[in-house]
Length: 269
Image 1 (cartoon, rainbow, N blue to C red):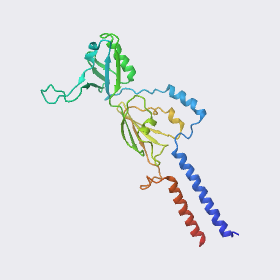
Image 2 (cartoon, rainbow, N blue to C red):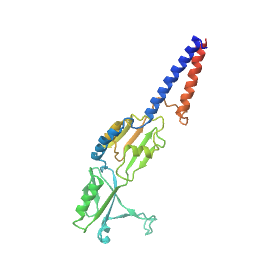
Image 3 (cartoon, rainbow, N blue to C red):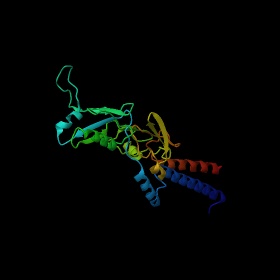
Image 4 (cartoon, rainbow, N blue to C red):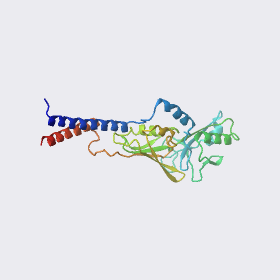
């Protein structure tokens, strides 16, 4: 039969164990994305995403690849200038396979295009820019087709992710979730509720805090990324230097064992 002292010890151990269990549950909630997303919220999220402008806009210092095609290839050859490098000065031997020229969007938001001259593209999507050039070319070429792509569309992901770094993006529609996926997702020590996004908007830096635990992220104007956006995932308060490769449940068990031993030692006195 247990004595009062024994019952007291058991009660203390049960209380501590319960607290640790609830702490563990809280930690798991913080590790999960989109805790507030429900079936009922999906409709409003989809409506928001449908209306959200997802296409990236052309900015100054962007480099664009522009190709023009038509039924008569000779008629558009002048608009597809190749970039070549030669083996040595004065040589006619090409050092590498020629590639098409890229066009820099200057500080005024313009590119200098063959025959057409300066064209302002800043602020346009790639589709809008293609249509603008196509309309200008229609005066010189029958039924031109214009294809534009970003050459230097990159995003940077830093902080508590598995593979921090800079990543090229091959399309004009990329979300913050895509960026985290490229970086291998957050580590267990990354704060999901306070991700920092830095954006250069016409020479001015913008800063935004994004909570990936909430469905509000889908309604954020920063859900879709722009070229050269920087995402920083800051560490949470429980990160330790030597525990990167130790599962969280082992850490909890170790803490529980230490507390039980301490409580038993104190109550024994």
